[in-house]
Image (cartoon, rainbow, N blue to C red; front, side):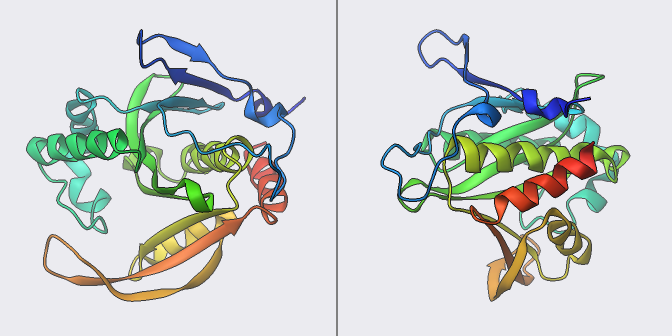
Length: 236
């Protein structure tokens, strides 16, 4: 059986009519070579990424309440390492408004993570710190409700986003970072195949006043084929 993720569905939201406009399957496009004059540019517009278990859809303001409902009973655990507050419906609304503002400025593309079988929102993730000139992007601000942790959801979501970054946008580098104290996240990023690069000391002041160190990781375009093959094997 062919790996079903080879049929990743991508759709862009029309800015003029609000309709869905199909985009070519990224996995079947010719490989973008570094320095190729025809290399794809990072196009910061709303899109949907779909796999076997998960669908990543563009965030809307009304998603804040749905996500609060799925996260509220476990908010302290889920957002322990998030540097901004996520502990009330008002926090979630501010989070959604900020995400939409960043998206309007071309800085981020924010997704709601949806379980395909139930169509239920179960978390969020995003492309952030988008840098078209240097063909790099960060994947981060990821959280998933506990019932879907330690499932294929996060691995498949990262697979879809990495595929889009390298094969649709022609990125040469994808970054990930986490709190230096978050050993679980550090281990998960390494399992993706990313390389640990180092620690930025006293990098962020969190909403509690704690000053956190951040550990940076990356995957480069030359490393992507091997990383991709390993991820596909995990998801098969």
